[in-house]
Length: 471
Image: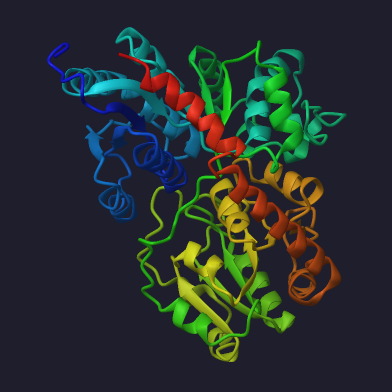
């Protein structure tokens, strides 16, 4: 017996997920790996703010060795309604520190707590864990390129004064393709916005972590992963532990998408979805609809209500009082009923990508969706909306070459003719065959990385061994 705890207890890890399914899902998969394959138990700390039925479903389906604690509601009345998602997330996490301290202190008394692992917005909480003498790590839910960008951002901030879109030369990150300023993540595009200040603050906090776990793997980003290893004296140790993506076993199929796919030829359907938070403008929704129709290809499209103000309008809650199908062109659904399926709000994405009828994925290129596509061997058409998605496009198209990029107008609009062209090229053209072959190769590399002798499994084992040996 030690401090009221049985020493035979499993070592315990506390995870914290900031609001958003894109943060919760990979963290849940990481927790499952550690519980099922490395001998840990775990507790999830989540936020009452912006809790959704989807979040509740994920938490209720966790492995029996994983429990959850919902933190008290965090007042945000003083935050402007115009505040960016990043400002809201960082504020919630920062203000939760007293509640997180209480939760960690409770877990330390009742479990053999060996580590605290918040997601990428959680650096403000690392001092709380340090105060309680709990080893503290960050789980970076995006990729190596994005992590390098964030680690180098404070230096770029100090050495430049212009808006980043106006940089005369691309930003040269070690091990990465040159990154034009116009393709930086949208959070940093307005240096006067509170979101930019918060991002700098959050990233500076990474240096107090004892390690950073990244949801990526070496073959996906060979140059960036090597650069992180070469810079090991400049930041905490980095562990590449991915790709973590959903199994899809708990996905509901309310609209019978899989039944419809069962009736389609092999590799003939383009899946169109913009993740858990992405939304299109009204004009872009119309252009996409007519483009899909003009392409003559089969498609399964997850439609959300458009927003002309915010491309991440569905981030905190995908539900909507309106029927998204009402925003499609008149007669669109009926005209395309023989080769297209349109569903509102949500589809079982992993199961759709895994289906033999799915031959391509028109995606916002969020990192979770990207890894799900790679894990199922499905090539992509890139359609970035927010966060680091434009940076991901650079990697996917010009780096590993598993995606096609449509031509956009100066205002960012993809016109219907271009939609039709790139969709036909993906499903029938020579470039589509090339990216399909390359994504199959990357799929095999992803499987290998997670195998018992794979690079990601070995990196996770290194971190797990450190926690396992803490008394």
